Length: 212
Image (tube, rainbow, N blue to C red; front, top):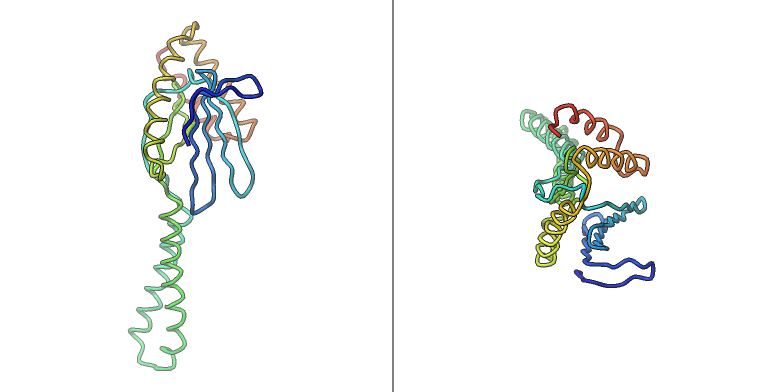
């Protein structure tokens, strides 16, 4: 769903909303742009909901599109596939019918596990479009590129780009202060369990190489 210019009970004006859902995992993602230059991001899954707000001026307006890989399911697929091949090769080399009858069910089980893991890998490895922080390059907004509501997605991304540019142009502070604001916000996101400490430390390491 994509809506525009609605006044909420808390006094803020909602400019645009995008709702997305990953069918395979049941995860819901909701993005709400409000008061022209802020965005609220909400991600609800099996373990609960995480919600945070950002000033659009700390974002880079040009998103990055890539595929998120579920390494756990990829490694699971490889493990079960190798096991199936090993058992299959042993059966192929054996001339003992008793061994064949005992091991064949294991081969079938590993083949089924391989196919199941492959399906889970494909469903849990979506194409995403990320908006990253302006200076440290930390992914803060992750949109599902292959979401069924493609027209809503395209409209939202284009609108978000324009609002990020407008928010940064209206900012009355210099680049050095903008960097300080970004680092401070990233630190708060770590405390809110939105970002990991590792991501935050990697972001700080980029600062000495920046030309502000």
